Amino acid sequence: MLLPVMLYFLIFHYWPMYGVQIAFKRFSPAKGILGSDWVGFANFDRFFNSYYFNRLLINTVGINLYELAVAFPIPILLALMINEVRSARFKRTVQTVTYAPYFLSTVVLVGMLTVFLSPTTGVVNHILSWFRIEPISFMTEPSWFKTLFVGSNVWQTAGWGSIIYIAALTNIDPHLHESAMIDGATRMQRIRHINIPGILSTIMILFILQVGSMMSVGFEKVFLMQNELNREASDVFATYVYRSGILGAQYSFASAVGLFNSVVNLLLLLVVNRAARRISGNSLW
Amino acid sequence: MRNEERLFNLLNGIVLTCILLAVLYPLIFVASASISDPLRVMRGEVLLWPKGITLEAYNRVFSNDEIWTGFRNTLLYASTGTLINLVMTILGAYPLSRAGLPGRKWVMMFLLVTMFFGGGIIPSYLVIKSLGLIDTYWVMVLPGAVSVYNLIVMRSFFENIPSELHEAAAIDGSSQTRLLMTIVLPLSIPILAVMVLFYGVGHWNAFFNGLIYLSDSDKYPLQLVIRQILINSQMQQMMDQSSESAATQLLMAESIKYALIIVTSLPVLLLYPLLQRYFVKGMMIGAIKG
Image (cartoon, each protein chain N blue to C red):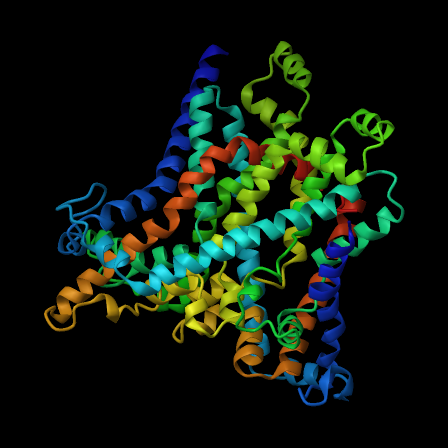
């Protein structure tokens, strides 16, 4: 029964892992993966010394730090607030509405950004014009890129991200709240001393995962928001791999970039996981 | 004490209502703008409710062949793809939910490794290429046939089915396959519904595989088609070049974008609240056991 599943993972996941050796070769389609000549770390050298390396690193880590600072805490706050709602109907409405944007496609989301923020016809610039602010060309302005990226992420995923915390909150023993109320604890005190400690292990695990992907930003949204004018702020490892590998057919070089990226991510994950286990006793495994 | 309680509820309600409106507003605006007179949208008269109702934008969207092709392709990918996803996920999750499976721990490791490490875009591309899948329908359904995360969620659900049922069936001499078909799956309707939603929405919104592996525009999924229109503003074929002025075309273009967002998102937005009860449960299982 397991055979088809094992076969799938062998072909579509382990075969590419085997193929990643071309990062250390000069791949030529005629000679194949095995037959191509080894070049050691030449592809990596070229990448580390290229003009793009610093820019890609700064953008990728910059977007992730921004996400960590802004997009990470919001679902936690949202979950804590939703958990305090007493009216079941209002609670359900808030949940249904805030989850909804998660189901929109990335193309639609970026499409919405494009129409809302258009300098000539967009509603945002219309509203700004009431305050005598000159139209801003948000989508092509590099300084706006990261804010738009993170802001629209919050709009799309904050509700969805809160589900996991709401689940953790419902698992907290109600007796804790009962005895705290008998002792005269206020709502805020109970949130601080019961609810937040109660979901701390969930927070830690998601934090580990988030830091573990510090070196990667999902390809699709950056790619769709990217244009010639904002590239200095929007170019990340994934879009660079796509341009040099898929469009430019430099298979070995792009594989090296990708491999560097995933190895650093893996190391980060291991380090943060270990640190979290030491400090708080929470870890992924 | 009472007062503090009331103040807390009031403030919490106000903040949540503001969040609710902030999430809702862009969606309402798109819907209103899509059925409003494009000129009045451009002048900034439409802020919440539609003004000068017209369905012209929808008319143009639905009379466009490329959009229909996109819909047809995506329906094909979503239906076959989700079916493959379901079968594969069950085939993986069921054996792994049985405590007696030899080497269970190793198989789990084999799957989990792929969640944290992969060959990357280019080596995957070369594999797809050497399999001859480039520019075929299969490339849209095979590479993502199983998600490890979903498999773990489903396995956890199966594990919670009382083992007495299995034992009783084993005594009666049922085979594992029969057991799965007659007992386990009928008890797993909620989790199957969640999987249909997750995988189905994934296919509906899929963009990446089409971008990388397809060059034949007759096979383009919906998202690839609408990207041209929404983000790259390529929609000459929806305009009447002979009779419409450049200004009218520009106005119409914005209207078409609003309508297109509604047309492509509405099916999913209408479907998901029906399944909300189930997927929250599904997410919880995954969160606790994952």
